[in-house]
Image (tube, rainbow, N blue to C red):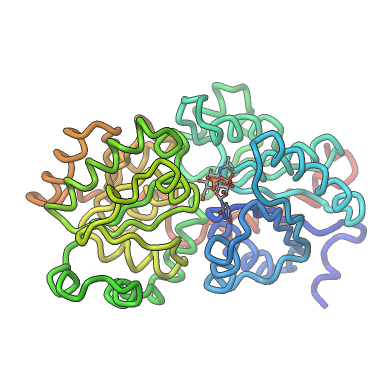
Length: 389
Ligand code: UD1
């Protein structure tokens, strides 16, 4: 009934998800759209960039995401093929559904591909999690971030520093809204449902003796091409993790990209040990539980850097840089790079001293999606109204 209060002739907001880290960002946004007065109509489009049950459907279920209205089923491919295929399949959806805006989150190929389709059709692009910069243009995500922000009409940021990055790139302040972090909306909303780590490890068949003594463990995730695509990088990283595991048992949730490379480079023997438990990709509630129970998280994921900061769990980032500096300045994150000595030193410090305490950054309060819905509820009708551009 109230939907009729959405200005006549204004189409739904096409909300795009593609890869795993998009799902926890979109779930609170869709909920906030539904709770807005009047509700903001949404059309959920899944590009199918991630498609395995463990990488997609399971997270939809755990996060309470509705079934996508449309699944483009693009699957895997080179960056060019994947991006082009998403564009090719998204364009007819836009033509048919006439969305009032295309809302994208994060920095994956689906984010950029759908933004490009929209902007070329004169449809406003809304980018959630804009302005983050690693200043490392060898990262595919950095290219996706910079280009999406350039063509976005409305940009929502998670930390104040993002504004300066956007200003340097010539993006005017009136297009930007500092709203907080939708990923943390999901974390706070689901924290109580997190699955206990003991249950997950037992279900994975982890050695009972280890489990009994493994009240303390480190959690590992790796999937960045820079870390896992070359044997010269992956092998020493795994060797270092193995050394860490002699001090602290490790639980390693393996991304399909990483698993494939471990197999291809013949490194399984190095990755697997009684003190290094390899798990398949985990669901959202499982990862929350594993993170919350860990002594330290070793990762190259952007999302985990933020989630550990929100949970107050020490994080060592196995990269040379981060696009999320607030997790280092205010949170529990330390960027240690890939060198053995730095990683072992970081772990020792945490085991001896407990690691950085940190505080939860401004507006990471569980209400970011609500702020986005409130802003869009005002902005979109204006943008489409007389004189809007
Ligand atoms: C993508 C994102 C990255 C994000 C990550 C989270 C880009 C450029 N990268 O990286 O920013 O941090 O998702 O996971 O968009 N595969 C499967 N099953 C799946 C999906 C992928 O087996 O459901 C395998 C395929 O072999 C595929 C490979 O993983 O080729 C990589 O997938 P892809 O989506 O290209 O990139 P990610 O490494 O997942």
